[in-house]
Amino acid sequence: MLLIAQTNFTWFDAVVVLAYLSMLVGIGAHFSKKQKGLESFFLAGRGMSWLPIGLSLMAALNSGIDYIGGPSGVLKYSLIFTVGVFSWLFLYPWVAYVSLPFYRRLQTVSAYEYLERRFNVAVRTLAACIFLFWRVGWMGTALYVPCLAIETITGGALKAIPLIITLAAIVTLYTMLGGIQAVIWTDIIQFCIMLTGVAVACGVILWNVDGGLAAVWRLGMDAGKIDFYYELPIPEGASLWDKFLLYMGEPKAMSAILITTICGRMAGYTSDQVMVQRFQTTKSLKDSRQAFIINACGDAIWTLGLAFVGLALFGFYQTHQLPPEIASNTDRIFPHFMATVFPTGLIGLVVAAILAAS
Image (cartoon, rainbow, N blue to C red; front, side):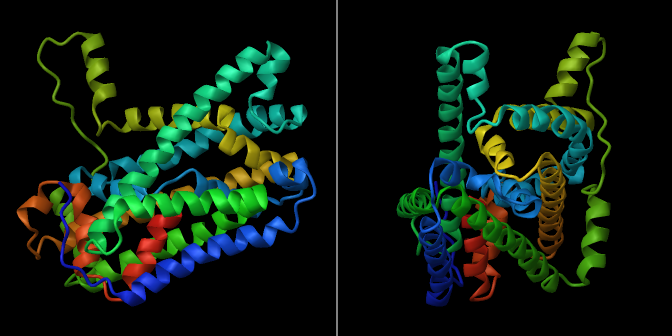
């Protein structure tokens, strides 16, 4: 059941959100005039530099779900989930010296063209269909969950289903108009809005916590929210295999988090069309490698920022009461805070940030 809270969302916030959505369409219209063929539409003429591609990757590979899940993970468990940022250190050799040179030599548009060259068109088609089914499911979730949160934040002023339809239509429109260039530059703007939203959230929460940062840190330490070690409750007499399964299935096991993050991202940077196509738009292999570094740094800042939002929220609600129906589900706490504590104007900015991440 969706819980609609009393909210500070006003017409001014709605104008902020509308301005953001209008800007996306404007960018698509601008780049529609620069399309000169298929290579320009799909690969931006292979003329993009490392910085815009790095920021574009960062925005494209995260979603509005992070705005809910990042703080929620800290509220429910601890900062242990941030160990995933170390996965980039292990990924760099693979991506920079195996995956990127491989696709650079092929000079392809699609990540799956190689499969046709190596095997046949049926294998390529199968791989492309699997990718499409997976991405459609991912995009559906990436739109639905944040839009539900936005409905709560705005007190029902913005309904989830119309918002999903509107956002999907706008994204499709600017992509059709401006091609990959429009997508990349809107990604960059979205990246800036996403990080601004996190910074604003951190500032507003700290402003409302008695004692500020020092109090948040102290309360987090006392409650074990800053712990990175977790002792597994292993049953007596468990076999080695049982211990392994228990360890890999435990959400608070540090190495399990790191291993799954590395494997998931390694697969993505090898076969995900969203990533491969953006890397193929760069001028050179050197630009692709530098873009990957920017992507990694941006993701680390994003992950740590959202984790701090969760830690600060924990500190705030040690001295402020939560309704029982909100306290029982950590996914609802950040939207509830935005709806009830954020001042007018800033709600619209953070809603735009959630939409940008979606």
